[in-house]
Length: 358
Image: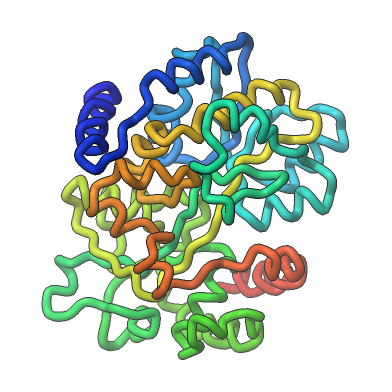
């Protein structure tokens, strides 16, 4: 289904629910945001950036005349070096919450132009709890326990304790090569309740990780690797990306997952302090904030969005797989970006030592 057909079908659904997509408003937005030149977006790889390109970037270029080029991967240390050298290459970054807070601390980013956004999207349409002075919400994304149903026909794993149970649930395992959210997952596997995860008990988490380390066959160092693992059924159990798992399942690939004890966090669009095309970056943020654009993207990736009206354009299948839906919020853990900002250096040193000895 192409973008035009998708918008037509969501329009019909929206009318049935009493919500009418504002195509006139979309044309008005194009007029407000039209410009020239180009910009570079630092984002994540694989199917994720493909979906961003098809739902956001290409339509933005067609509507405004501003060219968008993508590159990966958002990196706070690299951004800091760019700012220090006076040679900032990126105009917009899709940053995780902890990265945004670190960038604020290091004075690397500028405030978001909410006045421009409100010219395109009414303020009352935005979920205010997700907004930040220095970042506009990109997605609320999650990690889940995923598995190959062809491998576990007589009973599938349903908890992180099951992931650790290598005798009952035999098979090749994959884990994320990053302390966040591996520390949280380890504590959940060790019986810590969701509402008592923070502050993280670092010693207890690493002790639990020691148990599973010999049984991890693939360490995922870039989220784009998830697409390959799912496409080729290379592993039987994994700490997986919710969005990529959902997409793979929709393609008929052998993958199932549970939202129970999943983890989620908020990411933000941030603009470097000395971005060469900051004005164009702000225009792209405003364009993406429209409900129709968000709903088009969410059709491909079940990620939480900041525009309330986008949810009325989603099918139940999609809303059921969004980490920030009310039902899912009650059974998941939100990653605490402030804890990670305060403890990142300490945890990273220990993680690198632990990971290098795997």
